[in-house]
Image (cartoon, rainbow, N blue to C red; front, top):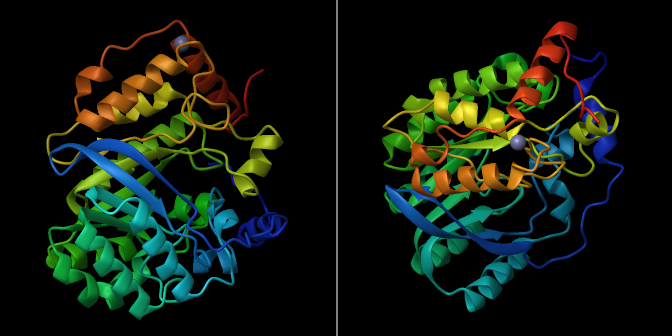
Length: 340
Ligand SMILES: [Zn+2]
């Protein structure tokens, strides 16, 4: 890992502050997706609520996260309740609902406690299974509210990596693997399933280092997770990663790297899915070759079925470019941007 000098946390904040937050009060968006969840291919609806945003983003934030662009510091609890009522008018019921906030659902500064409880009850009444996201520090004080939904709720935590150096110097996560473990164990003790996000290719890692980091991280997480989402980094607006990307010091991972991580962590216990944002696009995971569509589709089908058959034995002439890219990086020992 090749770390820059200076105050990383402050640099992230400076770049982020160049972009305004939103003034809107409606929910951000809703869409559908499919993935292998609870032992089958599940049809899922995603709802992104607009909140004041992640509390950590007000102090500094994570190097790759641009979600705060959708947030509005002036949103109140009753605005959030209105968003949920509006959403339920349009999509009153369904199988799986993922309700995201561009932060932590369980953060009382983001959604007041009483609103959390009321909103969650409405959503749990309408959908068979609900997934919420949170940083681990909010789990302890919320466990009493969510444990009644045991078996019908999943809590997702974005640990990204189990390497303390990557968490601190590449991502600026401001929590540790130990913090995550405490939260995951508490959730399991209360019968609540755990989803963990793993970030493929945090900044300052070469392609090869990034693959090794994700493989090791997933193996570390298997005892604590019921499902793992492998998220290849996509370059979001107003982030530190975007600054590196624009100055030729970051390239999103190759789709070949995604496949290598999935195949090397193959197991029978915990599904590892990868719903890739911007797959095949310049700012998302891509090989930069005509095969991007085919390989993206193979990973999508795999993630819906957890059938490794979709990603085994894939080949293309551009695999050599991927190997050459990694060899070039290992000779200079720092990450390089897109080769044009
Ligand atoms: Zn290709």
